[in-house]
Amino acid sequence: MFLLFTTALLLEKSILVLALFTVTLGVAAYATLAERKVAAAMQDRVGPNRTGPFGLLQPIADGVKFFMKEDFMPNSAERWLYILAPGAFMFVACMTSAVIPWGTELTLFGRPVALQVADLNIGILYILGFTSLGVYGVMVGGWASNNKYSLYSAIRASAQMISYELAMGLALIAVVMLTGTLSLREMAEQQAGLNWNVWYQPLGFLIFFVCALAECNRAPFDMAECETELIGGYHTEYSSMKLGFFLFAEYINMFIACAVIAVVYFGGYNFPGLDPSWLGGLMGLVVMLAKTFFFIFVFMWIRWTLPRFRYDQLMQLGWKTLVPLAMVNMLLTGTFVLVFES
Amino acid sequence: MTLAVFLTLAIASIVFALLMVLTKNPVHSVIFLLLTFFAVAGQYVLLNAQFLAVVHIIVYAGAVMVLFLFVLMLLNLNTEAEPRQTARWKLAAALVSGMLMLTLVGTLRAGAALPIPENTDPHVGLVQNLGKVLFTDFVVPFEMAGILFLAAMVGAVLLAKREIR
Image 1 (cartoon, each protein chain N blue to C red):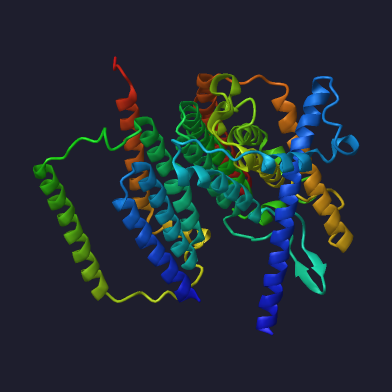
Image 2 (spheres, rainbow over the protein chains, first blue to last red):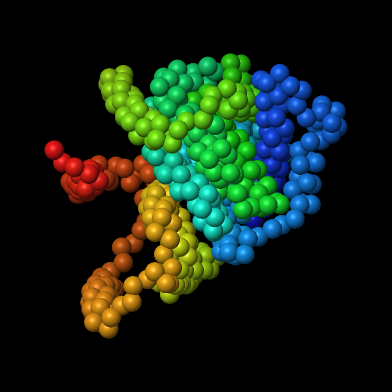
């Protein structure tokens, strides 16, 4: 009986991991198309429309193109680290999705199935941990290329990520104070209906959102690949699918960051009228994905609207605005929790 | 099963630690140290101390080693730029590290004689229990560590300031 249970659990988790992996890659691939479509709409153009209906086959054509390109490696590059860096970046990006609750428990074949790979009781810290590892792919890749522009970019990226992780962590502490848990599933369960954390944490959400933009290397914080100053940034010397991995992993990071925003601040799979039935569970999943896609759209909207920061402005904003604001937010939240709980 | 995982992680951490010391390139050293940290974090997970494992990764792998790598990249050390060490320096270094090793071995031998506390509660490493212990039984050492960090931070800011008016 126990063996049967473990086998079923193992099978369920394997299928879930596989499905999540496929969905993540699919969303990331179509986010590249969406990015170009959004950019086109904002600049009053049509965007890619030659491959398939509405250009829907464009991501597949892009993938094939990446594989067909010559895989060039500079002579002076650090061979192993140069090869390892894109893989490490991709691996870290894919790992983060494991703790995100995508929906309520569904009952399949008479047993409850949670739409989450692992319900760690420190889920939010797991996400912070893996985000902080994301910088290694950029740093090692930039250094191993043995190119001055790449090195500059790697140094910029690492300084930026460390600075913004701090404010991000401080903004999350306020949420943890409010909910009293580090588990993402419990956080989502507490936000039933429209009782979302964003109503209690508007400032915290704003800080977290800005930091998420910076952590994903998205405009207006894309200093690491600032093409007007650094050619292509840390992936200047990369070509073929190695370059593809770097670009693709950034879209995965964006997808995961938006999912985290949806779960932590916008109630995850919750919406008014969520019922625990089978259909209701699926609706929760749809709502969760809709919220995530909305934030992906906001990320793109910002990219094609705002100009890039200067590097010193970036550091000013991180250390002198966001960190103190996050601390004030922490103090206010602590006071409110203390007053309303006693 | 647990023993196999433990042995794999233990051997991995020893091998990576040795590689970290023996490799010539400082950037490779940092990467190997990073892998050692991962192996150690795996041991924490095995002991059901998930919080400790994640904090270990966030602090050491996510912050400290990034700064190490940052500095090494800026310096861009290589074998030509490395200053030649005289025999006297080598002797002094060997002496100092030998003394440290002696202390560590002595401590470990004394510790081995003590009885191993039987861990009956598998939830002892979880974050709720850790927090309770830190803020009740160990509140004074905990706050002292906080003050130590604050002092170090103030010192660093003071050093980084160019001119003091």
